[in-house]
Image (cartoon, rainbow over all chains, first blue to last red; front, side):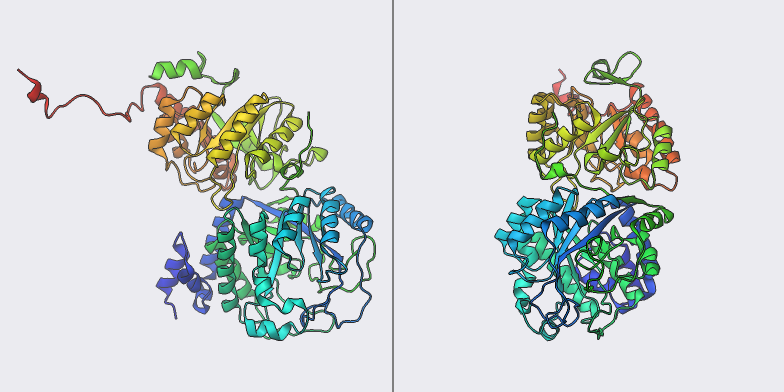
Length: 355
Length: 270
């Protein structure tokens, strides 16, 4: 139990350690959310300004050999699987570019025989020719494979541990290579060693009690930063949502708790990217937007080919916020901020002749 | 000391001269972090700044009209100074500088190499390497550096047009935390010294100018103020005020020991 004085002190202190972080995420600190929100907003504006950067996920393959209970791409779910060709990937990426996006996050299920490293490398190269910034959210790779993707133009990876609780991890990952907790845990560290620029971490909120999860994630983030001090660290806040096969989270996270996580992470990591996805209802996204979030997705489809090629595929999860990129842009402006469509340039990765 | 400095870094109207180009204003502003192009435009207007830095990585040359990086800048009155923010090493900074040239049509660049995303501190080794190569390629280089007097001299020897030492880590609004080192840099410099990063209030800007800085740069302090244009105006006045104080003979404090010995003088008497 923490007393109000301890909580107040923790909110005000400039540099945090795990002890003060525990205070920020404590149940008692929920009564101090307003003060945490103010501090979080202040730190975010100073570091990131009045900007929110936009990205969009692009699912390129939903083949998967894992049986993750919470996921629509689960091997046991029967539906027509799809893998986009390079030409189709280009069409999808061009469609997104026309909407204004310059940052695309490529996603796949885990099926190395269908979407292996050669395919991924080609996909990164294809998309990198169209937009300035490409990140990936795919299955764990070796350090050497990350080096290949970085050379192809990949700027960042997102990899969720899903849960840091080993027992629950075992329980929800029924089959497939994803059962290897340690290999997955070391994934962002391998990517960091390979020289990736940014690493995004997260856990699926609802699988296990969140206070233990977030503490483990902060420790994980510190290990990633130790592996490479040049890394920009980021965190996402995926709350479990209904999908095909309907999975009910045992430990649902409510809105107040989600907000507490955003503020506590901002206070601990003033420089971290805090990412909110389309999964969140508009009310929550709009409310949290000015208080610590630095990046959001807009107009997201979780189906391969869902932007142009094929709109009837099965989703990995349901998207709650269905507003278009133009509407999201308008919304950002309405809360007094400027949407940032482009925050990167090919010149970082590619030698061009400008003479 | 005063007069020498004024002679080589200003003209008779006390204008700022950088690599042969004359500027009336001694206030540079950065364009990141503003909440809209309209506010940025008004802020630039009220600042009377003539050197406006723009992040190359945010520029959208294919879409100049909507380009947030250039929106609101009157290219007739202001020099758009592309910066290489985001670069982690010399190679990236050089590529960005070349792109900056393609975008602006000139070879001026604010060189920033910040490999540590947490504190955004400048990398002296990579900055030096990039400066050498860019100068060789004909660029006018204004490097963002830590308040390191030796590095400042070495960059000057390589041919940098200014040095831009930080007052405090970027975006912190902490004010002048590197005061003693800035004084040494200013005292030794043969090129204009532009104090960059960390200035959070007009009083910080005035303090930098009173120390003898030739100009200052601000961005976060303006962009995150409740009323950015008004804050820009306040900074502009503070820069003028600090400059006047410097010209009037303030800032004579020395970093070197004086030879006088008021307590032990009797030992030298007959």
